[in-house]
Length: 225
Image (cartoon, helix red, strand yellow):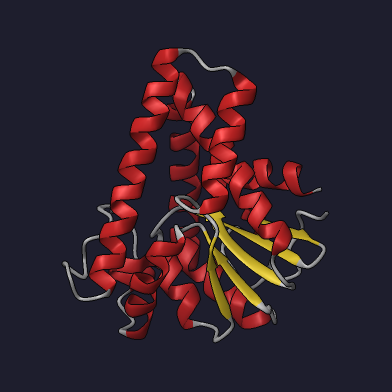
């Protein structure tokens, strides 16, 4: 495994990429201009068979519709990725059958306390509801912006790549500082998601490009090696 990017001269913050055999993990700050550009450059310069997205399978059709309309304000780096390629697109996050199995096995193995388990169930219910709303929106049965996220940043593509890259690094540092104070169930939730995503990635035909949150990179690498 290599963390060095052969595209380091042509994209912002190449340190947020991991190159594994038959798999390229592109870390992102969701909807950030630098992340969107990094995703687009990687997909233009590589030749994947599969595009894997940190999305529930139910949400993929909505992001396809964003990509078709070039509406990256709603779909961010995920719709930008879809727009750059015509290969198979797979949602690797939960809810899904793989996620349900992973959740059950994790909870049984870790023997979590009642409060942590309750918070985990609540988080899963919220994520599942959001995924269903995305699917309904894609079918025209709800707002097309049902999944629109409210992330905003102090830069945009007009400011240039260097300015956007600097802003992105600042957001990564701030998010990591805040995460140190997260309640216990958050770490368990992320571990379950990474177990699920690693399982799905290990079964996909490669070469694959996967778009995931930056903080999932190391967890996925450790599970996939």
